[in-house]
Image 1 (spheres, rainbow, N blue to C red):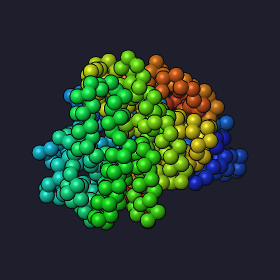
Image 2: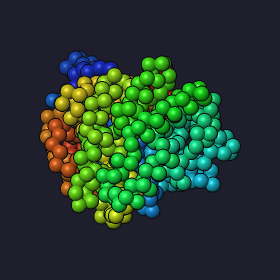
Image 3: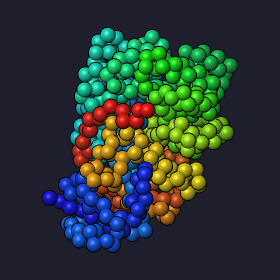
Length: 466
């Protein structure tokens, strides 16, 4: 039996803060006791971690990543090996990535392909959502089987006609099925049909720079699609999770539906909280680094996102980590913004940026843990194994120095991408040590993990329903 004791830190979960020691045996938390009490003092272990003056927090759960995703004629630049290593550096100990069904193929083929990509490669634990690109009777039956196996969430797209797009009828059928089998539909809510018209018109006018990516993907078309997704879910009697919410009008649609008592949930991402259309407008094609969908919005939208996170109209902050290098990948869109691969790197930055939000007074410490660890674990059937520090939970634990200062930079990050979306940004707080199921993955700012330590983790159905 291997034992580890973490001593002297401030343990922060979504519900509590206490100065406590944490006892770990065989990869799980077995006890917490107030620091200095006879119980805590009596614990002995092979490994002792000194957390005095530090936070002891659950490992982050990033419920939205895209490692090795094929997109726009290229692939996301992080593999499961490089991406999960970078996640660990950033204090995230579980990712939920997206397996992709290709049109004309089964869900099973897509899931098998992604399992093969990830198997033996991950430094931290992982699970999968399923992207449903082709709703047929066979697909609907397969959804039932996947839920039984622990793949309990299905992503659909109102955007990207000809690639991932589903029409309202297909969406309704999938929602009806999820209402029966307990699955959760995740929606990319943008009116892709209308957006394609605006893209065509912009290019015809010679508007080719990256900033036009944000201008054609209008906030109103995000709000319209969000509203439509909510109403379809209401007709189906199904819960709905709206991914990467970026527009204040979309937040308002979600808030209204929640006020009506509907099981509608919203996720946002750090890029929408900290970046804006100012970045998309950077000269010399630098703006291409910030092309993602939904797009970055004008700065005034940020206040509504922060407010949504405080009022719980938005429940989760994930990264939508989907990195493409500037050289050779983002550059595919020189002269035509519609050919820029959509996606930003961020899996390593999320926990630090959200701690900066604590420092800046946007959210509390416990809310930080709630939106980055506990709620994503509950939303996607991983709690209390993940997302908290409590007896029986996996010992996915981060020793976090709340006083250390760092400057974010491509020169120092560990993501396999040639730029940082937050280059030069100063933040307070830094990961010091990371345990994954009790094993040190980061030890005093050194990587001590390995590819293959991370294991596939089946999930139960959503634990967050009203």
